Length: 330
Image (cartoon, rainbow, N blue to C red; front, side, top):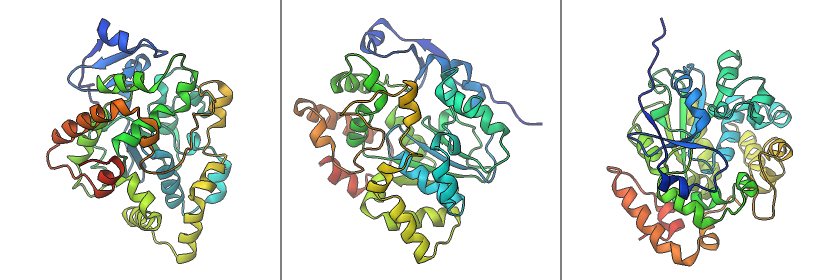
């Protein structure tokens, strides 16, 4: 008999002060007591379902904070996991072939419409090999996820660039009065839905020695895509010929990536879930250090202080050299 887990956290409404900070947010948000995580109100109805969503041994999972480089990593994982089935990748949008597990937290959402069911139910019933993405960390996923045999990749991006990429997320193009300072105030007070950046990083870091987990840095991919692809392939037990490797590298080149219609989420723009303006796009530059153009100068020292304090709270965390360079972190 399959063990059923009870959701381990109590939920609370936001305080008046927290509601004031999130006054621009278009949906109701609640907090998980004992964590730094906030969630949209719809998550209450599926929280236990997500916790009990059981992985399969041949699953490929991708976990990461929103805008951490998950789309690029998804495409690499999907192609390696399907033995380079470019035809299927091109003909099927990413939200169908690599669904976001918890997007059922918005009932009757665009994701539910294209899948015919909330993503977690769609994935439960599919007989195909599953590719699963989550913007929630390990504390909200099945407790045995790393013990079943599936492969889990955690993608991390330096927090400065990650925050700026969140600010450019097309969802916010539909939010009146949204600006970077409001987003920063939200993040600083642990109120951004989908969890806390450093809480997610710590959960992954504590599990770093598990053979079924690969912690991957977005900056690693940018620095040397060939080495990164080979590292992922080795983790998945896949071998590539030189020709296959070169074809894959060309496919994920940023100029080609931007043109890939299966990735650019036009369906979410057409539905109105994503807005569209000159400052927002789903696939952006794919570069490190872009925060220098986006973070207001008067906030840089404050954000640096926040980053350093949070890194100090994660025992023995390894801050890779590419992160230090990308963030001007001393």
